[in-house]
Image (cartoon, rainbow, N blue to C red; front, side, top):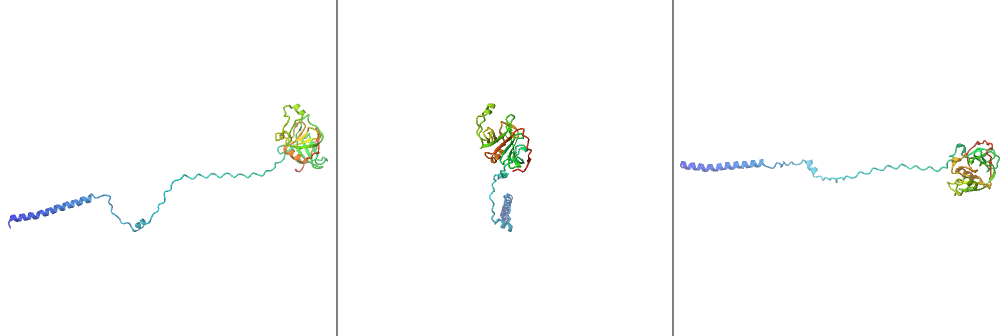
Length: 259
């Protein structure tokens, strides 16, 4: 074979080898480019640990979200206990008067029949005779100067919450007075009245307890409403009433037990 033929054969063999080298270079470049430009978010997958896999397979129950609710109103303070009303107890009679005029049992030697009423005008006391040595004493208001009287009378009648008709002589002196006033708390005769004989005088109550122990009336004998109610229950119709003169000496009684 000549030199020209050998040179052509060598060139024929050399071309495929060059092409192969070039193709390989291109393939490597493409592979490298693909590796460099791959997605950055791809992370290697790790196989879960055994206990993690077990936990993930267990169902999980999630409680429903609790809705915020308005706070419960504060409990109202318990009402203060209402004290049980004390039982009604009758107060001491004539407690609104000075101590000496409070109704009380005293030593009183009168020797009058029990049930007799004695009016001590001078000292503004009324005595209800209990026996020969004792009496129940009440504070009273008596006639003012010029209107006192003395003597003996009897209880002609008794009335609860009496009406009041001022006598003609009183209307002459005090023409502004009403001609008639029905019985009741505002009536000046008070809760009870005991009429003395055929006179205009009475033993009666009053709606002005501060007048007890004073000389204020037109001749009638007045007690507090509490005392006149008590006396009214004790005195009988027909009982003797002795009114001592304003100058009579005081009997000087001693206080005994209260009844």
